[in-house]
Image 1 (spheres, rainbow, N blue to C red):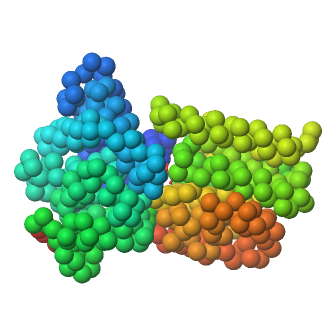
Image 2 (tube, protein in one colour):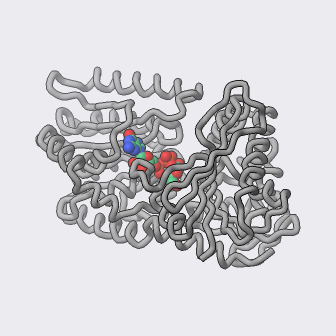
Image 3 (cartoon, rainbow, N blue to C red):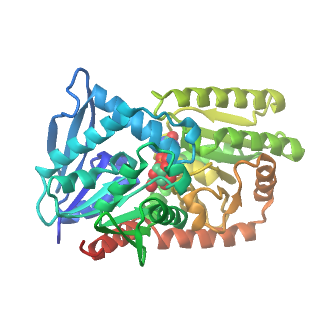
Length: 460
Ligand code: GDG
């Protein structure tokens, strides 16, 4: 079996449960092939030389972890400036939040070159390389420039926006041309794949060879939609373990006279949090029978707080939740419990299971794993209802959720009311279909389907 080499911005030890679902999923293939996982070490070297960084290699069981330090200047330009200041907002359709700066794109390229140089020293000629996410779009192109002939696949975890939005990025031709250095590029949804097709035909003059294969710049790339899933069994086991059961029992008792609604995400403007709080306020106004009963627990775990756009969002959420609690709250009932802290992963399934309704209403999301985790944690005999944004990649698969337009607060309030009143039989039948779906297309299916397609992607 050929060795798998995974490259992503951050690297995790797959043996540690805290590493999260993706690490566990990739860990299977990395373990089976004695693989290598390569990325940034997380170290920022003050006064370090741009374009240079020490390589650290250590063995974690049968997997080799290789990481590179970044100079403070590279971290600022590559990570904060370009990846999270340009690509994250534009790819989530938020051109208005992008800050274009020529220095940032040079740092982005420089770090990709640094990674390519360091990775080349570790590669064997028949390794299969799988690159992840928007931080590393030009990596294959830099590797090819150094003579790398390996099979290389790329998976984008976030959405790919329409052609016109991509074209607003000052160096979009360079960025998108870099995709042609891969043998396979994978997206979360059919909508993203369609956006790629339109872009490469209109802007890169690519020839459509059929079967989502495109030819341009003397290379052929295959594209596909590979919706990422979760490890359903692992999540179900977590749900029945002690920490989650304790959380469930405690919360169940506390909320026995209330209807619990739940939102869980990293604090990010793509997740539609202010819109969700407004929809909740509208629910309380339009359907007063929910007063003293419906309670929204909103977890917004801290993330990328070194970026200015997040400070404004944090303030908006604090003021919105304060106003809603002030306007509607009673001595014995607070409508919103807004928690700006990380909740332990082991407790999350218990929280999901006790919720009557999950609000997963991003303005845009590549996939959204919270929606899938919520389904996996439910009691099939008395499941909660998933209210899901039509703009999450997951909406293409999870058709039995109640789909909403996150920009329409009143419409969302009506749908939440429907979810709160849904009879048990309908909840059961929807949940059964949703569960079947996330089981059939779980994270192992995702990994195997992608790697199979990569092994079949035609030689260039
Ligand atoms: C990107 C794409 C795509 C959240 N709060 C806490 C916590 N979480 C965990 C959830 C879930 C994960 O974080 C979030 O995953 P999502 O998929 O919802 O969103 P992103 O982080 O934006 O991920 C996304 C994903 O990549 C995979 O391809 O689906 O579209 O944006 O697992 O449970 N975990 C803990 N405490 C929290 O407070 N422990």
